[in-house]
Image 1 (tube, rainbow, N blue to C red):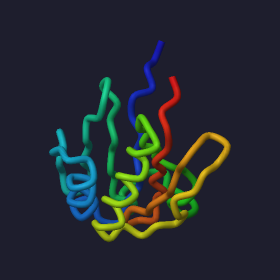
Image 2 (cartoon, rainbow, N blue to C red):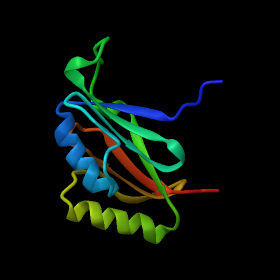
Image 3 (cartoon, helix red, strand yellow):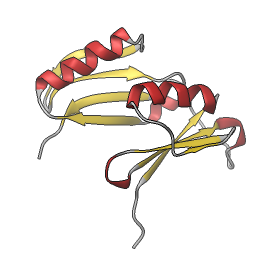
Image 4 (cartoon, rainbow, N blue to C red):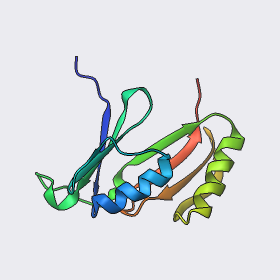
Amino acid sequence: MAKANLIVLYVADPLASVEFYRKLLGREPVVTFPTFSSFELQNGFVLGLWAKAGVQPQPVGEGSRAELAFMVEGEDAVRAHYDEWRAMGLPIAQELTKMDFGPTFVALDPDGHRLRVCLFDE
C-alpha cells in the first residue's frame, strides 16, 4: 500500500519560499533545486515547494484552498507560536481564538497558503 507522506505547495518563487520555511521550521531543506525544494518533517513526512509555473497540469485557484496544520501540545504552545510568528512578521489571517477543538490561529506564507496552529489531541 502506498504511504501518504508528502504535501506539495505550489509557490511563485521556490527559493524565497525555502528561506521562509527555513526560518519557520528551524531546519534546512533536504532537496533544493531552482523549481523544487523539500523539507523533511517528523516521522518521514515531507513538505515540498514547487514552482507554480512549472507544474503540469497547471493548478487552478489560489493557495488558500488548503491548510498546513502545525499541531502542538498545550495552550501555552499555541500562544507561543502565535507570538513568535507575529514577531516574524507573518500575516495573520485568523487571530488567536478559541474554537470547538481548542485555541488556534492561522497565518499565511508568502503565497497565501494557510498555516494553522492548533492543539495536538492524542
